[in-house]
Amino acid sequence: MTVDPLDTVSDTATEDPLLAHVTLAGFYPPPMGGESLHVKQLAELLRECGVEVDVVNLDRSARPSREYRSAGSRLGRMRMLLGAAGSSSVFHLHAIGHNRLSWGVIAAVALSVWVRRRAALLTIHSGVFPSYVATFGPIRSWLAGRVLRAFRRILCVNGDIAATVRALGIGPQKALVISPFLGVRKVPCLTIADEAIANRYHPLLVAVGGGDRDPGQGLPTIVQACRGLLRRFPGAGVVFLGAGLNRALAPLMGEEDVRDHVVCLGEVSHERCLALLAASDVLVRSTFADGDSIAVREGLALGVPVVASNTAYRPAGVRTFRKGDAGDLEERLTATLLGGRSRRSAWCSAESAEGTMWRVYRDVARERGRRVRLAAWLGMPRVVSRLAR
Image (cartoon, rainbow, N blue to C red; front, side):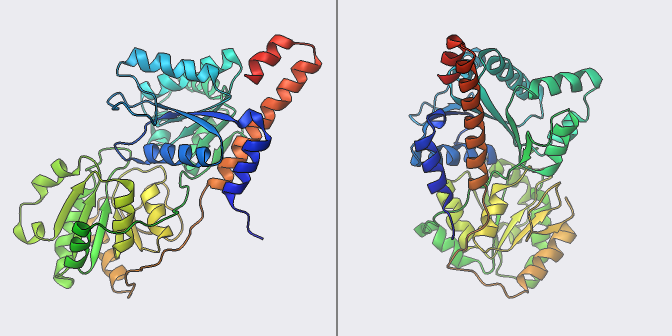
């Protein structure tokens, strides 16, 4: 018998009042990145299951919205963040962890939840996190470990991140590897304009930019590979998706023969991105660093062949090429396209992290419940009041 993860969450939220309210803090669309998309989808799933959710958008350029709270100044964001961390029943911070600003936010939240005895989770999204932490000396490593211990769980999007967290002194029962991919529920239809693009190119490649370093770093590799690919597939075309790619692509479009086979749509909605992925023959991801790309997971879920750079982690089913090697990318794309995989109108499901996420929330809520009962048994009403709020 198959159990729908959403049914499990709904039951948990209904039966356990300690999981009735969750605050999510992190980046939120727009722009549409891995962390921001994950936070948005997680908020939607929790709300659908009856959990009250507040979102604190840490993007300083965020526009006012009913979907989240935000502040333009750094001081305002910190006040809002610490206030939410101190008043939430379960607080879930999302961070990259590969610069001082991110660690400053993590440390501030850790101090707040430790002082106020709150249940807090931390998700680390950046594939650059391990190399950044590797620069820490003994004192900084010790301090980082002390900061991370304030969180009930550290959710890492790949194994390398988890290994780095564990090396800082966090036990394996607290440092968990959980993908940020929460499934594909529905595939939207192509817009009229996008359908014209899909019909113009055969085969159609969709390249999703992003990554944890410069989003445009892998673009020259794709453009160079396309020059060779067009000799075998003269009708091929590449659609580039992602914020900031128009400016990065402009100097690479010098030759007219390549320019006629490239369309850069830049930042698009998630629904439009899914529709284009479903219509494509190959999804290309040419980043130099990734935590766990949601776009790659979505391509696999949609049954689209995925060719991606060999960053620290790629899920099963991805065909990898050497980072920055246009010749290797061309070979992988050629082999994939010659494999006879046609575009699919139907999509297939893929393993998502919904069920695992629900179990983490449930376990943390139950731990809070045990602390409340213990404080009540010891005759500590003030502690009970603080923990149960």
